[in-house]
Length: 446
Image 1 (cartoon, rainbow, N blue to C red):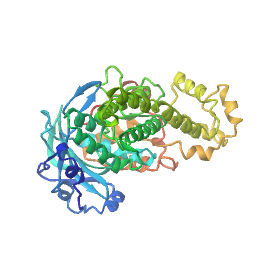
Image 2 (cartoon, one colour):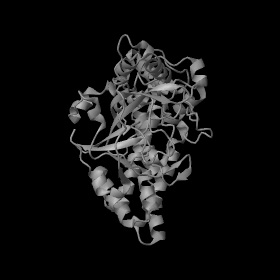
Image 3 (cartoon, rainbow, N blue to C red):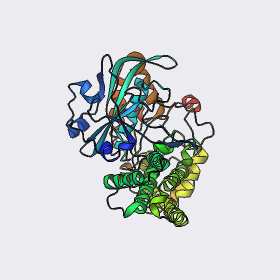
Image 4 (cartoon, rainbow, N blue to C red):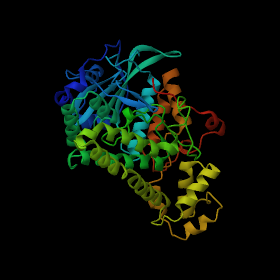
C-alpha cells in the first residue's frame, strides 16, 4: 500500500516517528478480503502489512472513567499512514514512547474480538472502524497465562479523538489547536462553518452514532474521551458486548465497578465527553471566554434532541410503523420482563406476518397490531444474528486454546449478514443460557 503521511505532516507535534517491533513469525490469521481489495493491499507478504516509512505513534490525552490523564497516546499502536483517505493502523505492534510501562503487545483473543465486533457493527450499518486483518506474531504474550501474540490491522476514517483535542489544548499552543481543527474539518466535516460548526457536526455525528448503539443493544464498555472519535465512528472494542436481556443498568466490563458506562448511561456519557471537547475548543470559538462558553453550551444543548430524534425514528422502524405512541410502553415492558432484546423484535415481526406467537400478552400488542406494521420493513432493521456474548467467547476460546478458527468463521458467516435468516444457523439466533448471562463479564482487550 502507498501511504500518505498527512497527519504527521500537518500535525507533527502530535506524532512521534516509530516502527513496529520485529516479530519471529508474522502470519495472517484472518483477513477481510473485500476490504483488502478496496485498499489494494498486498496480503502475500504479512510483514508488508506491518511496515511503513511514515509510521508514527499519535499523541492524545483523555478522561478515563472521569479522571483526566494528560498524556495517553498510542502505547501499543502505530499509524502507518493513509490510503485513499483512510487511516491504516496497527494495534499490538510493540512499545512506543507512550507505553507507560506496558509491554506494547496484544493477545490473539482480544484482537479477534475486535475483528468480529467491527465486522458485525459494519454489517448492522453502524459507523465503525474496520478490521483489515489479524496477524499472529509468533511471540508469546504474558498476561495471567502465556498467550499467543497478535496484531490487529485497523482501518478508520481517522484516529482523531476528543482526547486529541484535549492534548492539543493542554499544550497551550493555539496554532496547533487551530491546525488540528482545520485538519479534522477537512477530513470529516468539510461543510462545517468554522470551529463552532465543526463542534456542532461532531455533536450531531455522535448523537446519531450512540442512538444506533442503543437501538442495536450495543454496550461499548469504556467510553473514555480518548475512545470517542471526531469522525463519528465506533472505535476501540475492548470490554464491549451486546445486551442479552434488556436492562438499562447492564454493565459487562469487569473494571466498570460503578456502572459509569452502563448501557442506559451511554447517551449521558456521550454528552459529557462532548462537553470536554467543547472545553478543549473554547479558544477557537471566541477570544472572549464568556462568549465562547455560551456558544459551546448552546451547541451542546443540541445533542439531546438530535439523539432523541434519531432514537425515536429508529424505534419506529424497529416497530414497523410511523407511530411512536407505544414506544414508552414497549420499552417499559422490555425492562420489566428482561426480554431478550434482539429476539423480541424478530418475534414481533413474525407475529405481524402470522408465523409466530406474540412475544408478549400485554394490552399494547393489539394496539400495535392495529397499526398494520410492516414485517418485511422490520426485518430489514432488526437483526436475527448478532455477536451473542456466549458465542463470541466460544469462538475466541477455540482460537486461543486450540488454534481452531472454525467457530470464529461460522460466527462471522452469521453476523456479517445479520438480517437474513438462513437454515443451519439456528444456534446463532438463540439466547444465551441463563447461567451464562448471570455471571458474564468482559475485560479490557490486552
